[in-house]
Amino acid sequence: MTDEDSDDQPGDGESDDLERAVEDVLEPATADAPLAVLVAKSRAETAIESLRAEGVYDDSRRVREAQGSRGANPADGSKAREDGPERVALPVTEPPSETAVSEVVKQLEPEPRSPDLEDLLAERGWSDADLESAPGSWAVIGSVILVTVPAGCPDEAELGEALLELHGEANSVLADEGIANDGAAGTYREPRTRLLAGESDTETIHTEHGTRYGLDPAKVMFSAGNQAERARMGTLGSADERVFDMFAGIGYFTLPLARAGAHVTATEINPTAFRYLLENAVLNDVGDRVDAYMTDCRDLASELDADRVVMGYYGSSDGDTGDEGAHGTRADEAHEYLPDALAALVPGGVVHYHEATPEAQLWDRPLERLESAAHAAGRDLEVLEKRRVKSHSAGVAHVVVDARFG
Image (cartoon, rainbow, N blue to C red; front, side, top):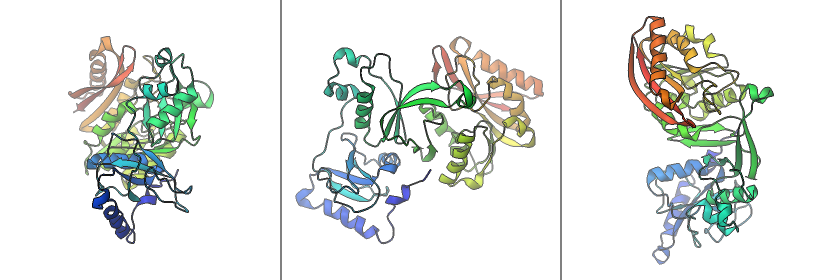
């Protein structure tokens, strides 16, 4: 995995060129032309997030490909280049002041963003009956779109191409077919996917709230529905805090906690996820705050003194279809790891306990399990917060309980 963000970072000698580019596109005679910024396609998702944060990203226009080595593209105003990475033109309302870009250009032939996927499929000849089988949702993970193809889809290839057109920053579309159950892939609960459109290399960098996750969605799981919980973890860490992430994966919760200043001990037994965990610690410049071990969390728990324990795994029961917390050969229920979590937790520390709970048992079952663990360990329990993370499956909710143990 390589990080190509540096391709568009302006050096000392380029800052003047950037200023001149901005001045050029703001000439009074052409001030009414809409603007776009050119960035390497590999960092389009990161740049879009940054432009949104600045308040200058224009959602009304499509992302357009800007020809890199293949010559000029009059539609976005770009000039021919003899070398460098493939670039895209991101629509903006005004030149950015904080986001690093290659150029600011005039978009001479802007394309309005299509309102939805069905419009694009209708343009491809899909009938009203065909459109009833179009997916209603999908996940964009970095430059990869992950979609569950509904039964009766008339043309998967056209669906993939339409999704690529809808998300101009994306390179690939994968069909999500659940989790593998057999052989080595089943041992590590690898996602089952098929390439529908775009590039076969699906390794990417996905950015959320400033945290960057390097991964291959065809090899490791990444749940878009857990975004709010990942972001929340980034608000909890502190410089003096010691955290134990028992099921770290590629760093879903480890990275935002470490970026907030916490020192995190992270365990993960899936070799592929563990490799990404190590790389992502470096990618986010928190390598000095992450101690990663490719081992079962239970082998390390009794050796730690943690102020906070994150239990982002909820077992393989209750109709589990796979998620960030399901790693390796673990088949135990989430609550079976509570004694080990408490063995690592200092008095007064906090456990973030995740569980897939049937709706009929909310919130009784997770609280009873926490109370049972506290009683067995001879510790007091204080429930701080109860949160729904997302719907897990029909009639089952993915929840998290924050609990302090004396």
